[in-house]
Length: 445
Image (tube, rainbow, N blue to C red; front, side):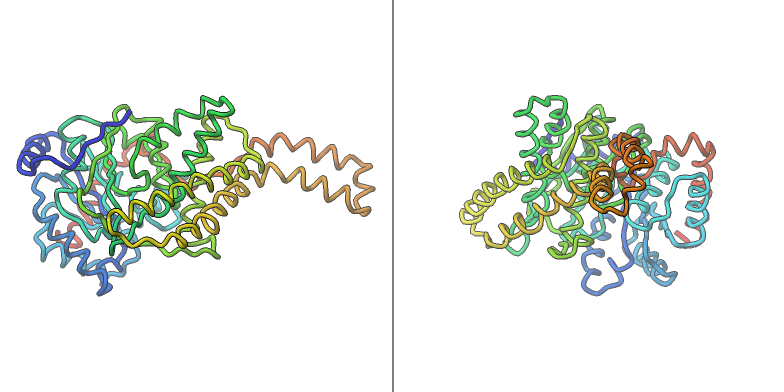
């Protein structure tokens, strides 16, 4: 079960309770960001609004700006903005700078494989820095929230800092320019979870329902705004692809004792929107959907022991489409009632031509290795050139490795836990504290 907290609290009382409890809980804010989120003119007002609101937050122990894809000039500009808005107790985690490059090198030398740049690598180090600073709770908020206000952070941290929950996740209504957004959640993930539940109930595969029911409790599974209690954060692993949010919830299902979901904003919430990319599975909503499905199904296969086949994914995709089409009809009614602009044809296109194909493509990724032996046997029995090899036992050799291939499953790109890092590098937190001092001195913050 998850605690659901609605955004109806008295704001003065909320701030007072947080300030009092934060004396011992030492909450830290982590904000991963790209340099373009404040260097590009179209993004700058959004980022400055976030800083203006953060200036009002007095209970945070520290703020960590995890900076990616930034030159020295870009990093210094961020330093100047932090000073301009009088943000206290903040420091910049300049990931490509000399201080934290050395930390990444040491982690990689220890075998932790943090070589792929991106948000996953960025926030992983930020979480380690937060733990090194003694944070009792750590919140993650993105730097592209167009409708950010400080009360949103208050609400996200409240269950951990005041109520002693160990995880908090935001939910909100995604409406922008009188249009419904949150398309991957609305049109792909939620119908897919319903389709999976129907399948598991029909086939009496009740073991699989625990995770599915847990995920279905959350109103917005793909929100990026989350907070962790210290002990939970030490045990968490994080995906480094677009499946990061669903992977995080799966980890929470395994490891958290008391999760909460919080109404982050009681008004329409807006951040940057991804392109659709229907013909390119390597980017946009298409890539995001494939990563989410492979992450979810990989967890069900690995942890719950589900056996998957091509037929399984075709059946799920068919059920998914039926559920999603019913959802679209309901969204059209909702939009008419609330005077929203709704393009039903476009939403149906997304379901049929993007998200359904994403489910099938994820199935191909997950089952590809288990089909190698079958396909290889077909080839060697089709062409006469293989006959001498078949007589020498080629078919038996292929069959002998079939069971190994069946047990082999797609690996989700992911970090280790900080608990694991502590074991391998016992003095890691001391090294991180030294790095923080060096970085703060460099930027004079």
